[in-house]
Length: 378
Image 1 (cartoon, rainbow, N blue to C red):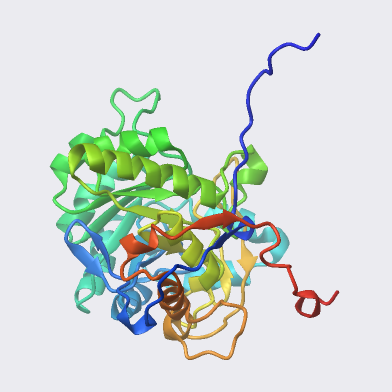
Image 2: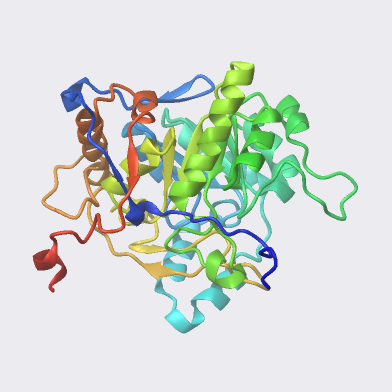
């Protein structure tokens, strides 16, 4: 005899396993709108640069703003620990591979200085750019209000896994509804991967939910802890929560898919699966303007006891403008990401990002290999 199964395991899908079906009506790409709005803040490009030290410096945040996107500066990184963060980032990028993580642990043990937080935010704002900053839940009540007082326009509360209910030894942990009373700016919260958690986060009143656990090129959370859900399934589940919440309350809370996006095709699939915007790391680490000089490392890389990230060499492929808008001679989809999105929207007949959510997506495990023998060298 065979008893009932201990637990049911459902199938989950990543970007390489699905494809977008063309629409019954097509439109010119130049008729599409890629605008993304977050509680009154509107971006012409639905792309956000991850809060990684190798990517977002004040100058990079300014350049992202010029290109229509948003850069998120890590308030617990080197920008808030050192007077000359560029020198420190150069040392991190040049450290020998077998010493890189240990060196990071030492560098990130320096104390966070609130005076530097104000200086970095002022540097961004003085150039006329929108300023978004990131903090972990444990530091939010201490650093978040100070950052907003200094002029930050968006506060991102982000950790590997974030929930609305968290058990800890502290007398009173972070309560998002209380945080929203303390800061008068949009608050994005992440990361999560499930319907239930996304819905609970929305019910606290936050303005955006960040989706993704472990898919980033520099992240090793999935290897170290075994935790994560492929991004297509995670995005679909969290977008379902958004739709149900919107139908019940009339308040629309955007979904931002974070990590695992390497090409224009991945970006398009994320939005077709329900994302309102995407958060990119390594693609932007390859920009000439990124401070990491062709390297990237995750925010959990310098954890003093259990690093869940690694430094990766990604190279420099072009300017930020090329990566987002071209022109490019690359045929692998790693540049002109916005051109790819506009073309895809035209193929499925989507005038807006919300229209793009209606596109049909199919399971297609051979989508990248079918008929590609010469490209794959077979």
